[in-house]
Every structure is written in structure tokens, then in C-alpha cells.
Image (cartoon, rainbow, N blue to C red; front, side):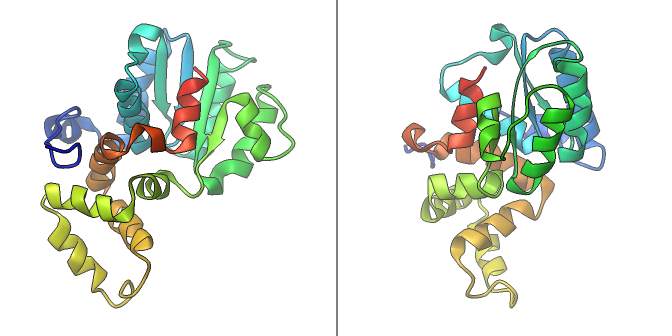
Length: 222
């Protein structure tokens, strides 16, 4: 049975139902992660829960146990909240070892926040990687779709019983004829629970030699 076809319950549906979606999900996720961050030696700051799931799932595939290593992955509920946690855990706060990952549209904001919080002064967004903060080409879904490949993403959808729904979505007038990667990105992002589920499933499906660079890099930095 292939990696794509075999069922995976690394993060169970019960876990997803318990706390990681719904209107209060970002707050609950941040609070849960803060409990681990308080005693962690290193913290990976990410924008949302799907980023947290992707980083933690990749760490397991790489044979790492982040908790035993003293590493916490902290979803902060959006780029605007990054400044608060850089102040709290950075050079002007608890002085933890920090790394992070963000979407492309948040990169300039976070570059300025890194400077104001004392982490460093990258002259460009490209230079942020030298401080351990890495930028997705667009966002996590875009990175994963390109890494897995649109045809194999369809196979993951089929294994989850969602391929028919995706084909129905493709026939919608505003999406008909659009590139498949754009269609997949919109389909995966249309529902919060779907976004979280496929953050895990696509990390589990991707060849370890083709993992998106920002995900590998942020783990390497801690």
C-alpha cells in the first residue's frame, strides 16, 4: 500500500474535532502551545494551526521528537500577533532560541517586527532566513501542492473520499479552466477542517527529498 493510499491517523479526527477548528480554534491552539512554550528551549513561531500540524508531522517523519528536544511549535493566530510573541520570547524577553515560518504576504511585516523586537535587522525579506525565519512562496497549501504534485494531491483526495467534491468544485464557473494547482489551493483552503486535515496528509504523502524548503529549514534551525 502506498504512502498516499494507506490510512493515517497520526492526528485523529477526534483530536481535530476537540479543539482545532471552529471560531475559537486559533485562541485554543495558541493557549495549548503556550503551555509547552513556557518550558521550551526553542520555539518555532508559525501563523496558524495548519502550519503547526505540518511542522510537527514533518518532524515525526524526520524521526524527531520535538517535545523531548525542548522545542515547541507556537501558532499565534496570524502574522499581526507575531510581534507579541517575539517580544515575550525574544532578546528583550525570555531569550529563547527562535525560528519561524510565514506566508509571503506577511514577510515584510515580520521583517520589521524582527527588527523592533531585537531579534535582528534583515535588510530584505530574503535575509530573514539567516535569522531562522522562512517564507513560503505563497502559503503552506501552495508549497505542499507543488511538492506533492497536483496529480498525487488528487490521489490523496480520492483516498479521503473527496475527489468527487473536488471535481464538482472544478466545474464552478469561476474556477472552470483554471490551473489545477490554483483549483486545489482554493479547494483545500475553503474549509478550516479540510485545511488542517490536508496539512497532515500532504506532509505524509510528500517524498522526503521533495519537502518544501521553508518547512525543512525551520526544523533545521532548531
